[in-house]
Image (tube, rainbow, N blue to C red; front, side):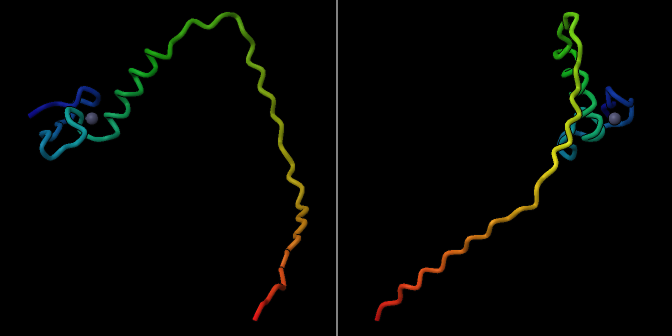
Length: 74
Ligand SMILES: [Zn+2]
């Protein structure tokens, strides 16, 4: 029986476990996230994160111009 490299739980065989060699999809995702973190670890120069919290106010003005062409021919 294979063991999940993430939580060390028993992982079901590949035939019945799409997340093999992990026990669950969750553990698979965790492992993936680890890799992503490694890859995305880029050296960031001294930069300031300026978060602009701008709440956009939507104006509820609807100009409904419905056109109904009355062109009925016999
Ligand atoms: Zn697991």
